[in-house]
Length: 70
Image (cartoon, rainbow, N blue to C red; front, side, top):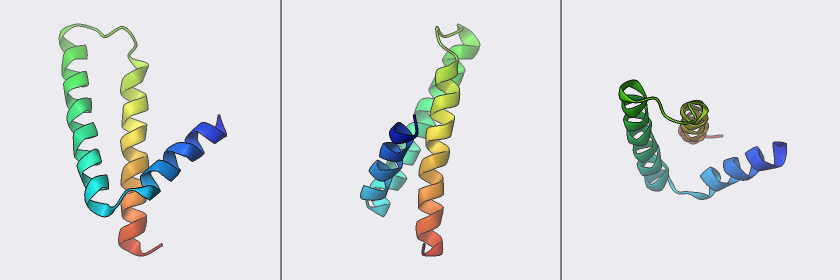
């Protein structure tokens, strides 16, 4: 399982700043839509909301590391 997370982080590191910002905004929009659809009609697997939220957090962490210069 650690290898899968490592691959995800490496994918975010390979993106440039504009692409990372665009991907974050796309995923946040997708999360809003998913939350709304879950409120109206429960989705089949609600754990996908958690996974998406954590993915966004990983991307924002990478963005913050770049801003701090790490």
